[in-house]
Structure formats: C-alpha cells, structure tokens
Amino acid sequence: MAGLGGCDVIRPQAFASHYRGAAASYTIDSSGLVTVTAYTAWRTGSGVSEAVSFRVYTGSGATGTLMGTMTQNTGATVNPFTSGTEFGGSPYFVKKEVFTFSLNGQANGIYYAWWNSNAWVAGIQNAVDQNSWSVQLKIAYTAGVASAGPTMLPATIDFIDRGYPYTQTLNSVDPDGTPVEYSTLLGRGSPHFDP
Image (cartoon, rainbow, N blue to C red; front, side, top):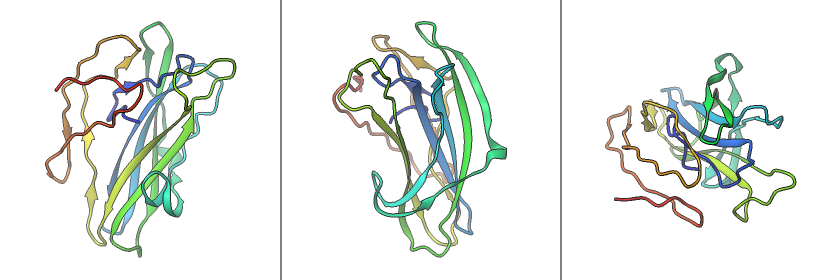
C-alpha cells in the first residue's frame, strides 16, 4: 500500500474502513539485527483490532520461505503518535510501533518484511473487489554491514478523501546516501499521477 511513507496517508477505497494507511522503514545493524519502525493510521473509535505483526519471508508478497515473525518492542510504542480529523470529519489516530528480527547467520540477499490485514466492514460493499491490503519492506542484507532503507520526510500528515485533489513533492532520503528512485504501482482504483 502506498501510504504514510513517513506519514502521508491515502485511504483505501472503503469509506467505512477502520484502516487508513501505513508506512514503514528499516535499519540493519552490523550484527544483522533488523529494526522496523511502522506507522499505522486508524479511524478513532472503530472498535476493531489494530494489531500489527510483521513476518519475514525470502520472497516478495509473502512468498518463499517464512523466516519468522518480528518481535515487537512494546516499550517503543507511541499510541497515539498523532491524531486529528480527516476530510469529512472522521477522527483518526496514528500509532508508531517498532519491531526487530535477526538475520545473523542467514545468507546475504533480499528479504521481505510483510504485514497484511483487511478492511472488511460488515454490511457494506467495499468499492473494490478485494478487502485486503499489505505493507511490505524490501530488505537488502549483507552480513557485517549496517544499512537502512529510504524514508520520506513530509512536513505534515495528510488524510485525503476520495475526490479531493492533492499535491505533494516527494522528498525521500536514503540514510546510506544512495540516490532514491520512485515508481508507482497503478491498478484499478489507483490515483492518477501527473509527471
């Protein structure tokens, strides 16, 4: 799900959904410890589970070998990280959580931290055929080498309702100094982008 990217959120298609968006970034220390910082956004008072749990796989999209589930550092949880009111008046909050997983002893290569859930709401039909969504991080691991993935640096957290125009200058940075490239995954119901 394109979203938060450091804290920008574009809601899923279902208007009554409790889930509003998410983003995550990672670091790896020289011992192979991967630390994921995740920001998830939710409709306040929805009364549904807001549990987040990342699993680590050798393949994209929860394919390949399941390496294990990341451990949550509950002492680092900030809930709410921030809160506010989106277009249309619904209150929301953003939760910050931190997870760890050791790749020490694993082969050098690409691993994927994956979290998925759904935005199913009884009694309504979502605007798209599928109700599930996911957040995935592509983690490049080299034994003994500390690294970090790119993050976006927005000035604000913006919740955008369907039909409202929105403009943002992308301003990602890679802590390792690697140039950042952008791509969009467009499908049915995706927003339109100007070059």
